[in-house]
Length: 96
Image (cartoon, rainbow, N blue to C red):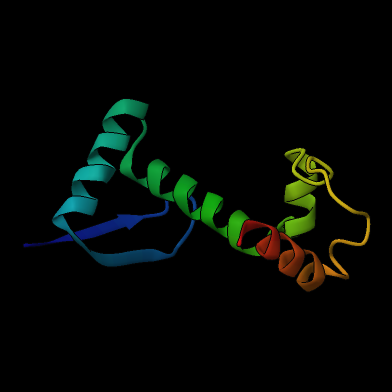
């Protein structure tokens, strides 16, 4: 069964109609119930958060690794990135 979701943005003239499946409808109702907000408020908050995520500045992979302490957390030769194949071959020979 498909649920029709329809609401009017209170201070605006835009009306949005959307079809959502039953599971998403249940999730929205649970969010509305837990937050005490109206359905409109829940949907507006979700759209704002998603928009911020999609359009906002996303950190680069290097920034994420640096912020979690991953960069610099390992030990090894300083030229490991440049000579990875050499070090891998040496390591595999030792295991054979």
